Length: 326
Image (tube, rainbow, N blue to C red):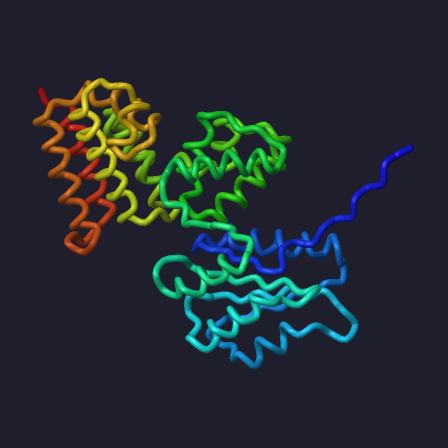
């Protein structure tokens, strides 16, 4: 005899979502709503900004309906509410109504911390959506996103995707989803470059990478394409400065294990490994000259030069000249 299947259980009536990463916060809200609708497919969702609600309005939306309809009430900006509103939320949390799930979104930090603490004490289920700022965190996000969608991604494809798309999690999620769909779930470096052709290969970082490697023709060609495709001159200048700065930091650190150096240098192991192979061709005097070139072009693209494109081309030439000087 087949044992009976246990009915799905509703999520906790109090939900506290802390953090500023918008994509993760929205996914957490959708997760709560999905869990509620497993139990009650007709459940309603109501969204409000805490600073725009009065305690009376909150009480109205948190009151059970005559027909016992399920409801999810989302209060955004919990860290912004005043004392009266915070007190009303805390009072409700002490005795939440049946069939209603209250979701409070809070940015975290010191502002409005008392409300977050009170909700925790009241037994609210806590979800953290902290801002993703470090390179490795974004790389982990990409890998987990691919897994979530049932795909696989090669290790060397992750940095290429991050360089092509940037740091915005929404854009990364969108690009990752498209790649999984277009490749059948197996993503390698070639697939990323093919999908992002015209962006991954002509970004400011591509120009800088070719410049510090001494590829004059390649760097100038990448620079021209980057400008044609609309890459801002200031981004190319920043990439040149970052490339030279990376060489200097890695060169000063010596030939240690990239995995061990990652923490102290504040950069991913693959970037250290790459810089270690590049910096062998650079003398300290050459790096100093390259630093001067990047400092000058930074000022040029921010208004000191009449033609930013020419200033960037001159900077690329100066960096490569410095590398080749003996």
